[in-house]
Image 1 (tube, one colour):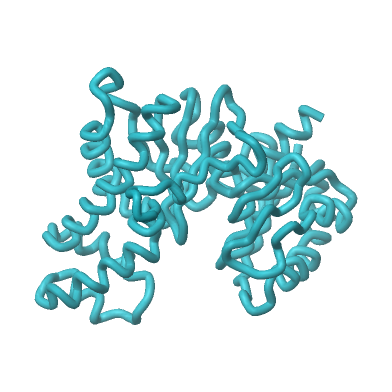
Image 2 (cartoon, helix red, strand yellow):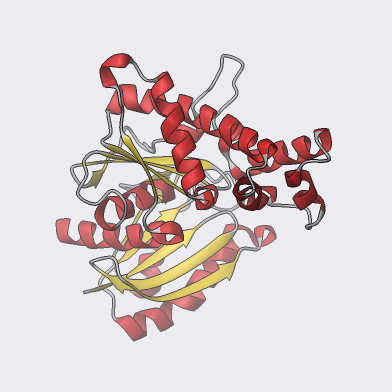
Length: 308
């Protein structure tokens, strides 16, 4: 049984065809022109959908959107990245394009669903997923389904405050904040290996240099990773105290740092968790990598179609 998946982010748009068991059969990726706003992205979606529908004969569409949504009504709650999305009835619009039912949820929730059914969280309950990318998002899966609070109801761990002055998790752990920290460190420690890597490459996405610097055991790279994981662990300790997940799955671009990131987070988290809950949940890297959202969107469409 085939379904379509749409991933809408602040910098990329992806459309997929796949099966109810999470297998991706076809994919289309498009750059996002922020100046064209939500209307420009809708034009791209409208142009790509007919070919995928004709080729794969899907039953429904699942959508992972990079921001808060009203999952019941299918309406975007707000856009933090691109103009022209706030209050837009996205599932109604998609259904109007191709005559198929469409279902939507926040992209981190959708990624969490994918990891729970087909990734690192398969067979585990409950699962908490945290995405470390251009922002920081989260999703909680209980008994195989997305946990929703009052609408819009996403598990917005990226906006959890780390102090009374208003510092939020994204300001310490998002990709852009890590990039900023690396640039500052390179200026302060110009003789470090990390600083040399930063100078030798075009500006932007400085966090990509951490992998090589960590491989070489560069102390500045290790310090930045340690600080970032300490902040994330402090935020996740509240998740552990409140929801007691069996596993925390870490995804997003920064998670591609791999085992050094996972190990540092696993080492830091118990320091912030109350004794009665030690050793705490297992920490795992996302098993689906960058396909967590599309696989989750396929799963969302399959589950919602089965429900009704």
